Length: 396
Image (cartoon, rainbow, N blue to C red; front, top):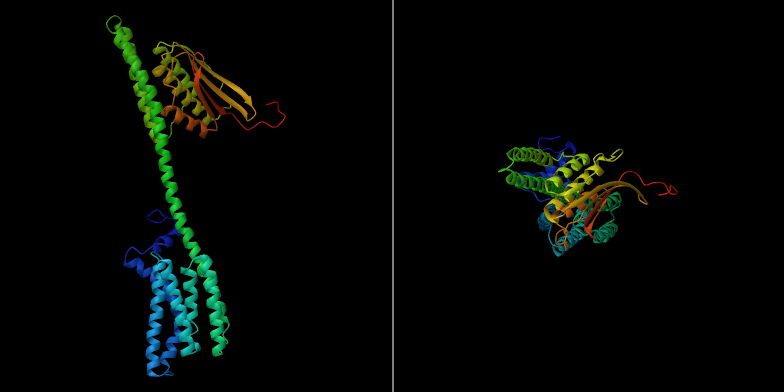
């Protein structure tokens, strides 16, 4: 790993910032270094101009045209690395390069045929993919016709022109893919952060909603018992302290992301909470949790906590029944938690934040949630899978 946390194989990409504009002069210099070696094909035109085979006017015109050709090429390719020109501008520059290559080669001789290499590179690197195919082919055909006209028989250069054009198309596609992967990586990081926020919000809602409801109930009981039964009031205050400490531990664990809720602990807590609220409770004391996946047990524990909290805070119920059953369905074995009360419940129109978060928890564990009014109260049923789907013919 490098000092900035990047793997060694990604350090080169970070150094040249593939597909992005240079941020400073150093980055611009590094990008230019990647371009300049390709100017080797200008060696033949420069040598031809220095040979003295042309008139003074032709030599000056040749130098001016060569400088213009090189400037247009470098500008086009360099800008394409970060802030490309518009489509029309790119097309105009490529057409200008092609025209200069044809005119200079026909007027100054076969030593200038290497200019078609740069036209092919510009086509592959800057034009859209479907247009670049035709442009590279047209450039190669123009080079062949000009070579035949001048009697140049260096056909290996034609192969170089074709291969470089298509190679630059591949490089452009690779750069585009790199940019898309970089954006996708940023999106994944953002989604992970959002998911962590949702997890924390669900945990805090479930933890604090239950604990604060229990603290409120016991505080009211302690207040009523204080004048006549100070010993019982003191016991309620001790319970409040215990619940508060446990809530603090749970919140810290939830923030750390390591909390695993146990169904047996929640069943015992449900018995205490319902009793403190004056609700007659029927809760299983020794549930059979053998072979229950940890994720499924945790999801049911959160479901039980949310259901009991709703009974205590909103239902006004006098009785609550909690059942835990194993069932065999067509989709496999499931563990079913049922919490039913005889209260009036809430408005019943829209699910609250608790039920919405609970549905998301159960879905992650592969389970389902059903909640709604029944004839004599309110019923919540949560189901989670216990194992693999049974084979066909097993009697499921």
